Length: 231
Length: 334
Image 1 (cartoon, one colour):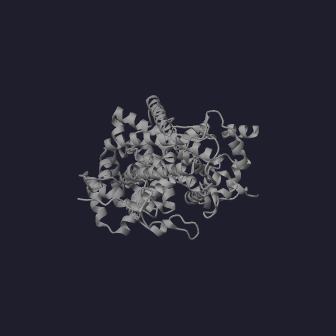
Image 2: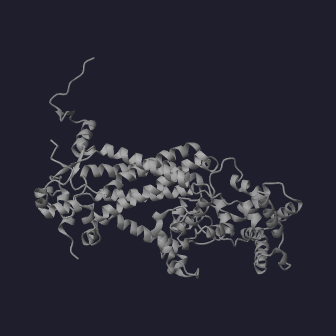
């Protein structure tokens, strides 16, 4: 068996004309490794407000992990098991932390006007992730199989029925809510969050408002800054 | 109100170097050391520890669900009256409209009537689903068995006449079945009593849950029936969960609830959406109006980068100078 080595058709280390090669070239041009996994940031990225984005992602992972355990044990396990109650408590508090972090992150990005410089889609995906997270949390409250979920489903049905959504999204249908909460909605939040993070990595962290060329070119490095290290 | 030139997004064909705001270009200024992997790992560890601590210290809310047995045992008169209302078609569920039945048109805002457009998708027949079928599903006392036979032998008009007459008489007697004036009520009192006895014994919970089948994951009928009485409403009031007391974002006990719904909940606190007169237009249409308001506000948040004025607020209220104070200090010094 012989193989045909790439010839003059090669382009940038890939064989031209292949979908795979095209995808790899597009990925490498928009998100090279130094952007995807950076070991340096612009010097202005020096505030505690930047912590809340990664904290939101971390809380999301804890939610997924605790939710996975709850999914294996079923929705009523935590009523009768101390381990189940603790796992449910992990799920509950990680959701609370998730929203605290996310809201602080959102407000921080608002006051930074972080949509500047072709970053509108980054903002939009962040808002969509926020709204999708609200929907995901809401379905979680509906599948608690306790008094709280009884009352929330009874009350929420009126708001959703009044605008027709209740015809397809029945908050009193435990099975439907459970599947949406455990399968579809976390996937939606996760995909949007990944998209959001990739956009952040591609565009970079937005510079300070009114940072102009002159200011940048004359500004010395701030504390902890390192000189240009990127080739 | 003039938009700052840097707020303008560069067109796709516009070279980035021509744009006045450096936000559109690759950063060419100083850099600082950063380790994204280390940051991620530390964040996961810290948040995990924080979550474990909160879970260990405070646990989580878990009030047991209400049951039909509990309701019928603690408030038999209310359960009895509700059963009569289900037969007479005067309960909230019986007169709800879509998506449960056609007894009403549902909420509409002018020509916008999606509740009507989508019709009945979760049919609920309160007479049979809540009363007659559960009674038939078990062996009953002789009195209840005779009442069921009498009910079955009568036509729909006769059934409605009996139930409506008894519901009216019971309401007149303030829900006291022993004080109801004599009248032609047919088997209705016996049916209501049979269902109350069945619920008190705990049989109704299982029957309604199974709904005649082996597998069941839809709680719509139980929730609607439970909500027609006073038990659910009273329990929610005691737990401060009513909509007009910020209940949408509250939680049982002293736990934090869905605080992120504060703006949605806010509208329900306004007297215009919360008046004592249920026929008031804004109050009777509050659910739909508030949903549409929130949908518009969400859209505004989503499209904020493109809305002149709103997108300039961060310039007018310069909180960003706190966030980037080191940068601005350095810039000022140069």
